[in-house]
Image (cartoon, rainbow, N blue to C red; front, side):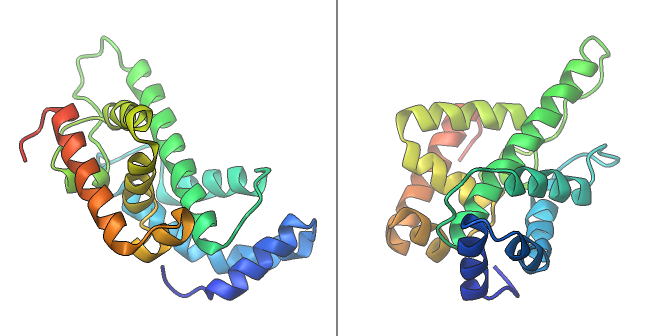
Length: 189
């Protein structure tokens, strides 16, 4: 993560949790740039002319985060929840888009950058979401690690801070989760 002081963000999140509305105003500029970077990353693999733009994704995610009743722990926790929020928005948008074009004979909606990393650029975001839900049913921690890393762009250390795990454990969990996804999505290693 870049440019925001983790201590500043953590202190402001704590103040916001206590009901200080001024803390939310101070927090916004500190996290906006990072949210925009995460959204760009999530949108990178989407088709040209995608109807959901990066800034709209940021704003929709931020509105959801601002209205969330979450006991924010720290900066890494905030961005982990942001990753989940962006995933939900992209999946909902993809499902709505797919529903709107059923029977239209158009090509399926390409998946975002997360699937490029996993090696399945032609799959749909809803396919990834379904696979992540199955992984979550089998191993919630591995699904969370994958979601935070690819949808949230969190580093191993940041994921470790949220989940209380070492960087080496995060690496192991992530490698397993990627291999599991490849099998589930029917893609070669």
